[in-house]
Length: 250
Image (cartoon, rainbow, N blue to C red; front, side, top):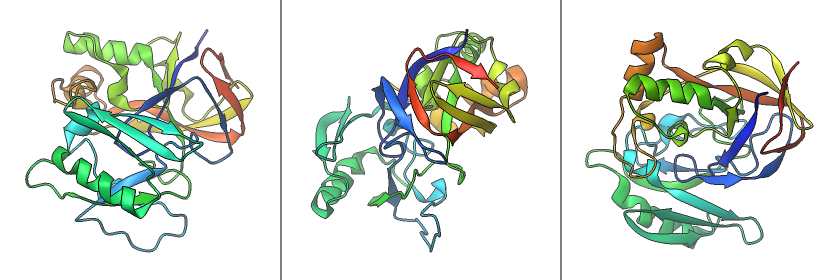
């Protein structure tokens, strides 16, 4: 039976990740505190936005700064503080909503930007979640599909490369692609599987080192003629989800 093996959130878009055991999700919203903040770069064009969402092109991301992939995070809800760690430098704890801490964070992030790329400039808080798609969702990854990509590459690869929220075990490879357009139930919540997720070069970077060491996009293209991996899951009925919850296709 397909079930949730892991739950991950990424409080700052493309900057760190942390595991969760359970969560309460709400209709039309992302995983709590997932992509709650994003780091706008010097070339960002953040115009007026009715829903507070902005294109990923405005933010620092692992596609252009692969070292970000190795960042980890830990969010403390009680104090609204976020601790970021990286193998390349000492960690940092900040409140991402305080101006003084935002300045400290931007300074701490400067070393991760390759020469010639726009440097981080400011912290942006999302009204909902600053996901890549304007229709806010959780991302669901089939661990068997990740293993199939690893087999194509001739090595095991971490599923954390794909920065998904829900990691699913118990499925055949690529079975999640058949869920597009269908609803699923996890715990007491229900989701619409809206579409597949087109991937970028961030997935080439190792989540332990931040170094590009696997041609994930080439493996998808050569093996299956696609650039998609995992699917968007839009919350259509709020509820509680947890690791080990079974998944029912409705």
